[in-house]
Length: 259
Ligand SMILES: [Zn+2]
Image 1 (cartoon, helix red, strand yellow):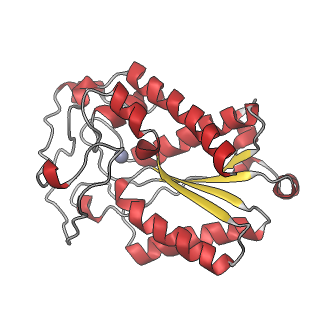
Image 2: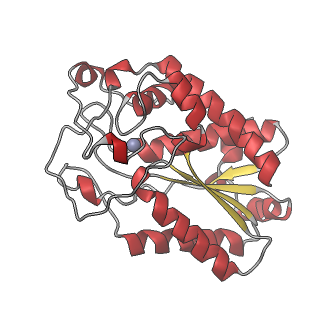
Image 3: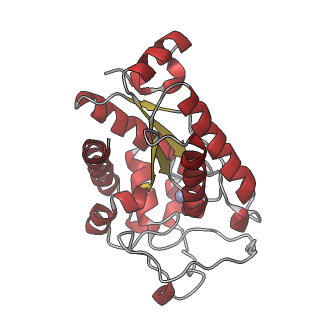
């Protein structure tokens, strides 16, 4: 099918209204605009979730689901990288309000099934709050929202494919970027000197199939850093393609089970 057929924004309002009546499922990709090391661009998180959403939606249509992808939300909670030029951040209340108001708009047009597809770890908890707030306000058991972090959603596959656990501007993000046609500055990738994670790993899980023992909050605009972690030099397009394929399959499996 043509890509435009999965894009919310490429329909006319007349066509879109008809799709609401046919039980279409809506995906809201949410990312960030923030530093991604010297080798990945600032748009990486919203580019990644947008492309993953489009690929998964096309696959879902071929399996009988009508799935529409909203324009991605390109801003999230990125205060900790504000000393790196180019990073844009919202504050938590603003971010939650924006997400709730988008969900409210979608539901007001008659859509009852929404997937919030997150691409940035800093957004995770605020998105759960937004979904809880929205469904509370909707007051309708038929209105349902699924929230997922893409790297956790395919955590088992991610751990199988990668040599190193997933973090930020690392092997995993770089591999998926390569697979999705993102700009990767290969010269910079050769010379990347990864950062040390901010606190010992025994307190935080880098394994996306496991929750961390704690979540560590502070007002923490770190000094400007090169900003890559793990071992991005181990990235490859093939690893990224395996993760993208796993995501598409699992997305449809999720629709079958939940919707
Ligand atoms: Zn990222």
